[in-house]
Image 1 (cartoon, helix red, strand yellow):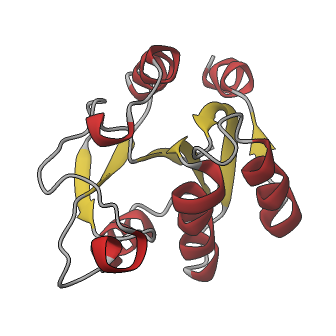
Image 2 (tube, rainbow, N blue to C red):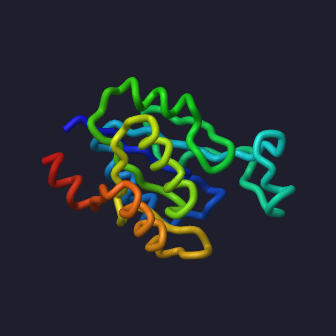
Length: 158
């Protein structure tokens, strides 16, 4: 199956647990990978004004990827979605930070673009509201149905 890994916001700003970084690195070394990095620009997304908080203005992905796209706010950039579409993959495996917000937003963008988003449930963490990510996993299953685990992906890769 032609597939790509989308790594959502695994960056210092969000203090990802080491197990997540290690797990995503191990998987990204075995398949094509694209990463997003969320940066703050108040003129684009008013985090400070509306939430009294904002991500860093400069940061980088903690996981190497074939392509890295900068985004501002929750959703993926149009450039990232266009790049993923051009790859002609059968599915996009999604992992990363904030299962119920940024990861879920990636799922909606992928779905709306006609791509097949599949969440890797054991390579995601939720926001401070639900660090387990279970709320986001449940929302993902409700909206997109497709979920898998790191072990299942590795078994498929052979």
